Image (cartoon, rainbow, N blue to C red):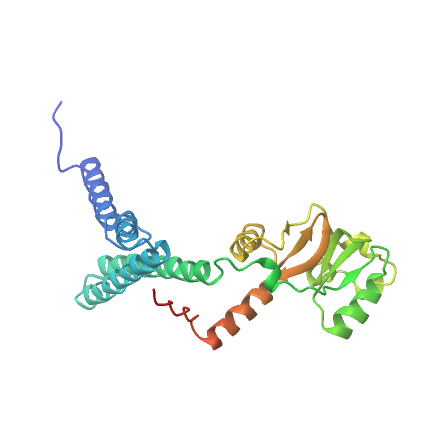
Length: 252
């Protein structure tokens, strides 16, 4: 059997091998979150002893490589290599975006390091009984007070949560006939302890795609933490500037 090294099958395999080699080389670039960047992060972590600083530095290197690839891709496009240039620019955009996401997550983790949920939570959440008519909640609490969410409790025990998303889509004429127990999001609720770190609450908000979590202590509702509470803290922290380190006392 005579092999045809110029046939279409050989060409396809050659092209695939070229693409795999290119992607492998790209993955070895020392820019986080690529594998090469993870190696760089590990080296910086071992050198500085600070994982957050190592992550930010490796992510900045990744962003620099991303911008370099975007610039090189645009140059290739202007030189007439449209497909290769666009592909290179896309890889640069992907690396830059991924590195920037990792950098922002590192900053968030450092900002909320050892910050308990109880420090940011709303200690006076809107609490309503399950038998309340939905019409009363919407008109007196949502429209009247500007609230967006209410905890439905039986005594101190949370039974569910009612937010704008629960009300949206229900005709206004049906509001007086419906109780909150008919429309609320029931247990199990996404709850967290007031002593937990805010980073754990952020992870919970992201994993379950919710805007607020109930803060529970011994099964009782003690507050609510929302994305807005976290954003408000970040804005205040930014206005106050970076935290100042306490001066070291001189040794006697």
